[in-house]
Length: 327
Image 1 (cartoon, rainbow, N blue to C red):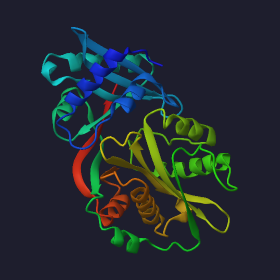
Image 2 (image 1 turned 60 degrees about the vertical axis):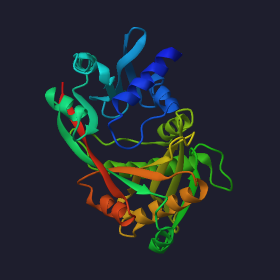
Image 3 (image 1 turned 90 degrees about the horizontal axis):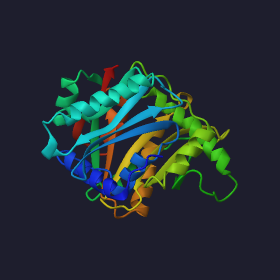
C-alpha cells in the first residue's frame, strides 16, 4: 500500500482531471482513482510518484509492475502534469525516473496508452515510444438505443445456456452452483482473452480460481460494480464464453464499461459472442436505468469483435494507441 495523505489525494485527482480534460469519454472518479494509487492490485505491484509545488500536487505517475505474467514489462498508467505546468520538463523528468525504476527492477519494456492525437501522443513520440497496438473506442447511447431490435437480434445458440449475475463472482450464490465452481469457470473463459491482439512480446496470461478470486475481491473496494454473462454447454456444463460490463459504484456519471468478451475455440461458430453481449446489456438496462452510455475498446485489427459492436449500434468515439518503449 502506498501512503498519500488526504489533501494530496484530493489535489492529485484534481490535477488528473485537468490534465485529461481535453479527452473525450469518462474519467476515473475519486474513489477509483484513490484505490488505484494507494493499493497494489492482485498480480501487480506499483510505485507512485507525486510532484508537489506550494503544497499542491501538480504531477504524478503510477508505474505498474506485473508479478505473475509478463514480468519483463512495466506500465506507465497514468503519467500526468497539470496543464499550467506543461512545457517545464516535469513530464520528461518523471518519464526518465519511471523508466529508470522499471529498468532497475529488471523490466525491459515500458507500455503506456494515449489517444492517437494530442499532447500524450506527441509526448510519447518525442521520447522514443513506438506504436504497439492500435485501438478504437466506441460508444452506445442507451437513451436512444433500439431495445426492441436488440431483443430481436438475440441469436439462438442451440445446446448452450447463459448464467447472468451482478457484482463480484465471490458473492454467495443461490441454488446449487458453488462460488468455487463459478470462479473456476470464470478462470477458464478468461483464458480466451489471450486470443485478442496484443504486443508480440507479451506472453499469455494465466488464470486460475485463486487469481480470479483475488481480482474479484478487489472489485467493490476499488470502486467498481459489474454485470457478467457466462455461457456453458448444456450437455456437460463446460464453460464456453463470457462478457462483462463494469460501472463505478456511485453511478456518478452515467457511464458503463463494456470490457472483456471471449468465446473459447471449441465453442465458436454459435454466435455466442453476440448472444452474451446482448443478454448482458439488456440486463444492465433493466437493473441500471440511470446508466446512459456504454463505452468499449478493441484493437482495430479485431475484425470479429468490431463487427459485433457495430451490429449492436456502437459508434466510433476516438482512436488510441498502446505505446512501447524498449528500456
